[in-house]
Length: 274
Image 1 (tube, rainbow, N blue to C red):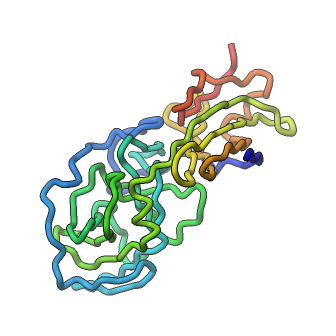
Image 2: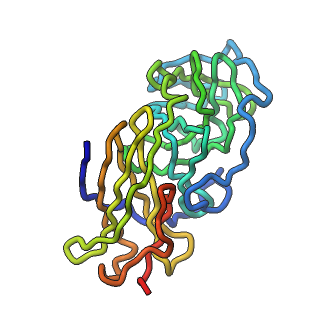
Image 3: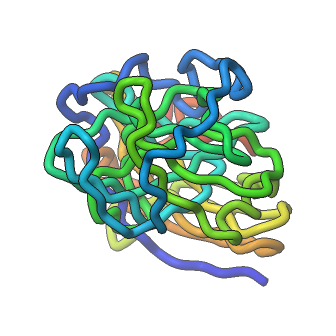
């Protein structure tokens, strides 16, 4: 099945510095330090309260915290230093959750419990820019290995001690090993009511529905871009057209890609076509 829509992009990618984020924008692949998820596993303390996602608790230090709306994604748009970056890597997925409470939470305070054992993540946890859904709180991405698990949960571990654990439901856990296989078939410059548009066609030949995420950037600005994202159901091709505000100083006739997009391109730099 083929689908076609026209979208607006979601604003500029240049933001103020975010606490807890490190590294430079990677234009489509993760540059954070990778570790082994199995490094120094620790058994979850039986004392912490175990909750369902969406439930709130007050932990020992008096902090109120809620973890809700978990989604498993093969890529994220993350705050990286002052800007945004698309992060994805083979063998890794991200459990993206909405966190609420009465303090500013660091992404590093949230880790995965897999089969009853809390493990260090295979990549750095990140603040996430929500693109295809509303995130009712601080959106945090916890990297996980794309491997099957009997059970899993998100643990709040701000200082090396697990304070609370939110159980993930069976459909969420079942998504861990099934990575959407999204392939960019085409990206072309179009004219949309006199403005510059970018039309994307994306196939999903993977085992479950996926989210295509990218950044569109003007060639004359360093480390800037607007996020674009849309859902691509399993076994379908979706065509979306976006109208990025940051490149509208160009006319549709003169706009062109700085580098010809490929199936793996997620960072699209656009300038005057020479």
